[in-house]
Amino acid sequence: MLLPIASLLIFIGTYTPPKGESKGVYSLQFNPTTGELSAPVLAAKLSNPTFLALHPNGRVIYALSESDTVRGKPGGGATAFNLDTQTGQLELLNRQPSGGVGGAHLGLDPDATTLLLASYSGGQVTSFPLAKDGQIKPPAGTQILTGILGPQQDRQDKPHPHSVTVSPDGRFAYLCDLGLDKVFCYELKSATMVPAGDFSTAPGAGPRHSKFSADGKFFYVINELNSTITTFTCAPATGQLSDPRTVSTLPNNFSGENSCAEIRLHPNGRFVYGSNRGHDSLAVFAREPRDGSLQLIEIVPSGGAHPRNFALSPDGSWLICANRDSNNLVVFKVNPETGRLTATGQTATVPMAVCVLFTSID
Image (cartoon, rainbow, N blue to C red; front, side, top):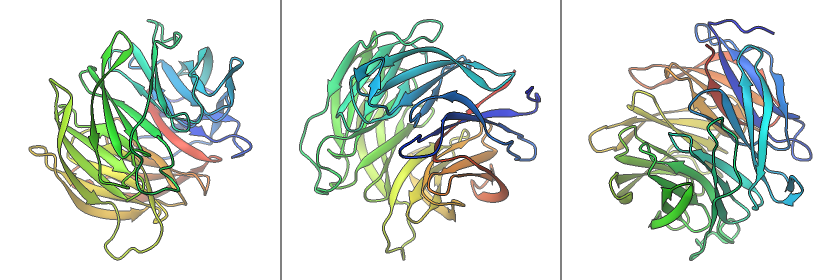
């Protein structure tokens, strides 16, 4: 199937059996003029490809695999695919085991020299050097997380690294640990991770995902367990975080159960978005570039159940939300002046969709 030049390609990570009915990674066409989505096509078979990352060259996609074994070794791992932008198919490049179980997230440095994998159940983060063609080399090192556990004993029973984010200059990697209520900083040196400090969130916050401002001066953490976003000031030269400020992602009158999932910054740097699972909504914040502070603009329904992940189009005009438990993708139009979201009515069905990745077509 040839894709029109006017389209973007979207790849969707999913849960496969026994958790879900998916078969792997799916691709869809997205029309950036109308907001329409094509029918999903299976791009690559893979067990539980629950998180995806794009190489800076736009031609290699990395997929996390939450499987019991990779190449015969215990635990999950990472898979590299070459992307055919004419067909939307993914061709296996290579795979590497991480040695950890329950993988949750992939991080990639701007120069594509290092791929980082956070193992939620294994309590570790693994670093992989990358070849020039995007192939994943054997692990260069592993950091095991330790520390004092948070107060929510049912969720904070042990260290749970949930994501790893690389600073815009590629010097530091930041690991959010839900179990320890900590953000750990590592200096990246030749694909190895050198500890460079750790920083606390509120007890019981459960830090999950994070994003940097483009200038590297502010670091935003969405906290799964207490439904908040914490803004840190970052010193780019040293990697140190300070001055934590926290806002809620929920309406003041909400009293049900909720957990946060994804956080994104708009390409223009003026807005921050976070997802609520339980309230099943997307929270929209205005961002003050001078001090990084956030102010709630609106909270809108996600159009489904359990919005596990969402992504903004490269130009920031669109947001696509993956609602895991209702098996649907929902398209929102983004107002670039106000940040507000408008549901377009455009949807697609993908079983157990848990990650959204935009790519471009030549």
